[in-house]
Amino acid sequence: MQCEDVARALPALDDEVIDVEIEDHVATCLRCQAELARYRRMLRGLHELRTRYLEPAPGLLPQTLAALEAAGERSAVRSLLTGRRLAYAGAGVALAAGAAAVLLARARRRAGFPAAA
Amino acid sequence: MGTEDSASLDLGDLVAAAQAGDRRAFDEIVRRTYVDVYTLAVRLTSNEEDARDVVQDAYLRAWRAIGRFRGDAQFSTWMHRITANVAYTHLGKRRRRRTEPLDDVEPAETRPEALPERAAETSELLVDLSDALAELPPKLRAVVVLKDVYGLPHDAIAEELGISVAAAKVRLHRGRQKLQASLFQSRGGTAHAV
Image (spheres, rainbow over the protein chains, first blue to last red):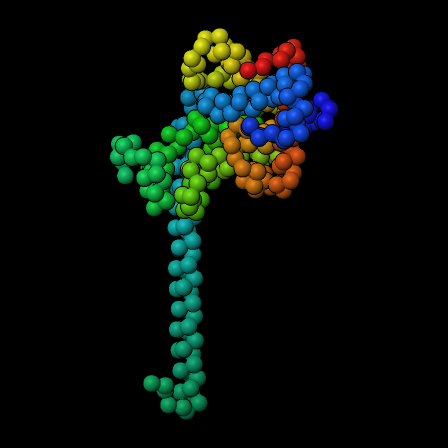
């Protein structure tokens, strides 16, 4: 294994896991030892960024809560409208069925059939 | 549930209350977690304005989906995945627009270091790292941030970014390569062995 092979393999390494061939080469190569140390330091630094919080502008929290509130209201209005639409549709179907039953009964009477019970 | 009641509950209880439809409980979750979500959004977008939009969209999406949160992952991990997904979609929509440097984004409170010299060196490295991350192409940056900063597994990253696990691994490899080159070049090529 050459130094270039180690350089190519480094970005695939996670944490302390290291290939035996790389380990053997690194053990005898000062340049690669330095490369590996820098690489591990970079990974540790990235991991440390996890706890480095960035301060948001003061307006972000109220804006986010307001957006949630507005979305909740929109959703409530939508569900109300959907409910009303369903109620109107149901009433329409009931009216149509009633009208059909009345017409059918009249037609039967005219034809001389006894009215249905 | 009132605001005062919500404030005394732990996050798990708040999540359960929000799943039962309690909006006040969800508001309290937002209060407790929005700095973390915002930080991830800035790291993914490299832009404060975009990050604010991403935070709002992420919480809207989380509220709609809170019933599907199973609790087998941490809530923070679940929020990170939603944020990553929203940020990636957002960046896709705004790809043609500019990216601004992070000059006005300053780290807030951080963990104190035991040794002042080491703390200074670490701080310098972290500033360089943040700058180098911001310079990465968004596709590579997303994978490096989610894997190396937030510790998400490859399959979760692939799912949220809409790519294959193999593609996520390739992007991570390329991202780390570029980051390493940019980082140690900007530090004058000096090896900082620890």
